[in-house]
Length: 319
Image (tube, rainbow, N blue to C red; front, side, top):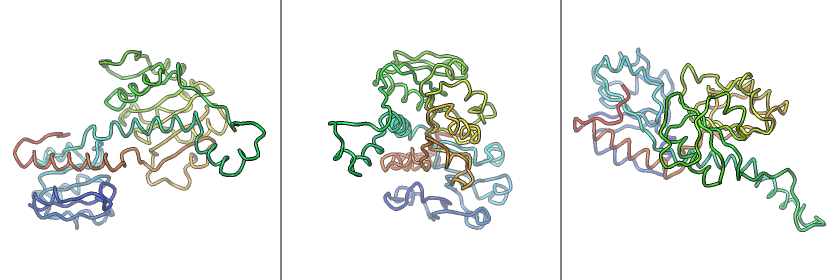
């Protein structure tokens, strides 16, 4: 069994072990693979492991009939032509729900950064401003309490639910939007509303929706104009959900208070991206999933997916 991983570095830059996958066969892992090297490196593989490497119809044709399984190191699977893979008899499996708690954690790291400005005030203290202050305390920007604030959650899958649970722990009110009815489960304060109501009434808006034709560019000039002037916008879902120029314009003209983003339309970020220089815009380099524990969980599920496939009982199949 020949196994090739075309972009293993972000999953395991050296702090985890590939031994669980090596037990399934002859395993070769590349840190990264440029597009023009995909076929060359993957040729003859029975199992192909990828993260962001794009696998097109042409690549699938070139790797067939040896290739029988593609294992994603991610939840999203839009990098693979899944329909064509199915026609060729190639099974494609993803890693669902491995990063739920980590993503929700980053959402609240963003929220607390904007509302409490910890870094700003820590830097001020280290720069001597407290030492020379005539009072026992000072603050450089208005601080905000989360109690009774309204958080609007777009998308109510596992991550949206986790964010709602954390919000309830802060005694926030939760508005949620989902295209289809969802069960609230043990959540007490969640109210499902249409998008217009969510944009209009939320103090904080956070996106946890998949990238579809309906959600692409959803955070645009029209919908941003519906938001409160003090609104905080957060995106940890998919970059193209946001019209980046419209969001940058809104921040620079102070139509909303702040934006916090872990994803951009093009990654790595382009120097020309208007959000890089926008006012009150916090951007992290797609790290919501990157905690050691989260990546270890991903790797374990990746191994389990391969084992399940080889035993004739594939799991987490997306095609």
